[in-house]
Length: 127
Image 1 (cartoon, rainbow, N blue to C red):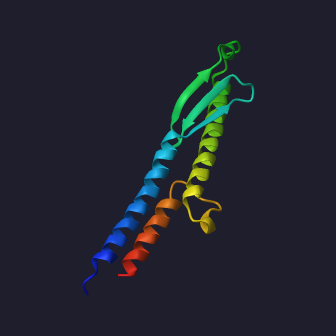
Image 2: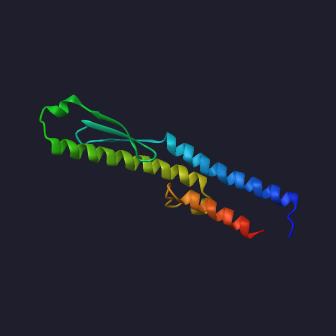
Image 3: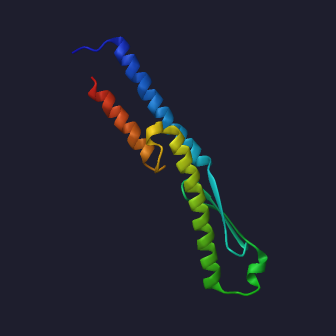
């Protein structure tokens, strides 16, 4: 069955809209930053939206009592805190791009892409 030009134009516009939503999430996540601190404030970690460690600051006072295991634990805790903050921000960004009825408990890594793929499949099913 031959499709009309109007139908094809509409589908192309819908695909472009879906692609734009995925690109917006991708760009937004790239710009996110999360910051975490050790409980004593001597370690600061900054993590990007994809969970990568971007910055690690150690206050010079941390060397007053050298303890490698304690320092490692402080670094890990600060990085985990920063990653959790970045993920909360990414979740909020992804939720804004999802339909209102799908915004609860969004997984920023997969939900938007899965939703867009579902919409694309639905469009294909209407052929």
